[in-house]
Image (cartoon, rainbow, N blue to C red; front, side):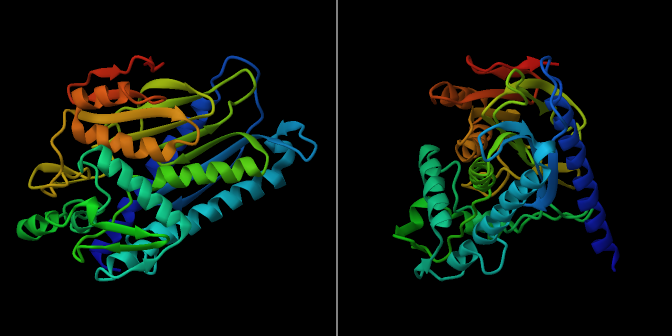
Length: 361
């Protein structure tokens, strides 16, 4: 095992430990309601979507429709969680840009020829195209030619910047209008264009996992896909879940405030989530689709909320907000029905939309 590999693995283990700590913190916050206490949840986690993902089931309905604590139905709760994670694994195998044999990998390597894809892949591409259009291409699911040139998982001290010429050339091929769809067949009209659904995939998968859990009788649960949180029901009939909003650059150790959540999804995007340092300068993973370099923004983080079932929507919207900056982002969310926001600016100020109920620490 060489030194570079050891450093890479240690960094990944450290990152996983931090994510586990955040999940534990969310679980503790979820137990802070003032009403009726609930039994401990049945909880499982795993490494999917390049992050630690967890599902905590608090209550389920049995075959007669009677609601019980999940601990009293542990076998059924575990089976429901396993089915949700099986779906997550299956969808990841279809829509991952880096997974060999995935639908996205096949489209990207098809040289502009038609590729047959799954219903889910087609649906996600279409949703990604909608938000690419909404943002006038600031958010664009054909950004793959740019993202593949950045390694935001490089070991500390070994990160390198992309070649400027190659990045400029790749940016010329970023255009969601290069995607053609007929039925379940997809092609890229520019053979040099590359798909990357990373800006919307976790939310979409979270919505599908929610459907699986509910179909198995789950009435109270929290899905946490590394910053994409979905609350099914509340912790009890009286108590909401309480979800913490992370303080940027705190290494997942501090929260800026809390949000009460019931049948709600929350998604946070931040420039601190994935970043590298080269020659004393920090570069984050939110890229300008016109240049391939990290966007210049006055925001460190954006947290959006919406009704359960819309995690895919606010996954894309949170990235769009981060790219556009506070003024444009706040106008966009105020004009979007059913979505509210908390904005954390670079100067440390916290702003929120008119309908957001956010308790600052």
